Length: 93
Image 1: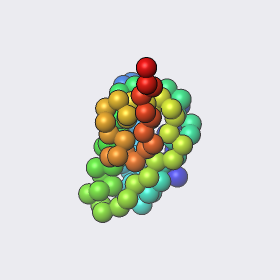
Image 2: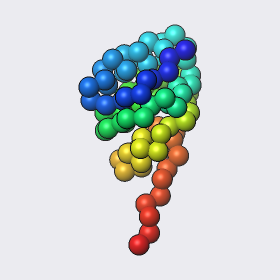
Image 3: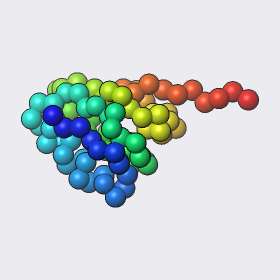
Image 4: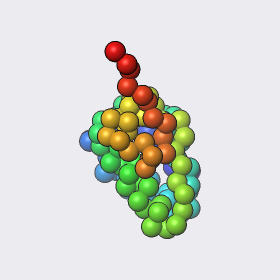
């Protein structure tokens, strides 16, 4: 079972994307993000790529245990629904 490692950043995105695509092609429908601790905007692009690959196979892909930093980025970019990760509401001032 494919589980992404600690870093999901620009430097690691291509390799992680490819590994996830292989897992999805092999039938994996849940990707556990619990070990991911470093992210940047590339992480959002990778997850969107995985979702697109799953949709092309008519498979529902789910992400579990997303780190708060990834959830925050997904909220910032307005893609929480596409990624199916919980949205973090902006603090009210």
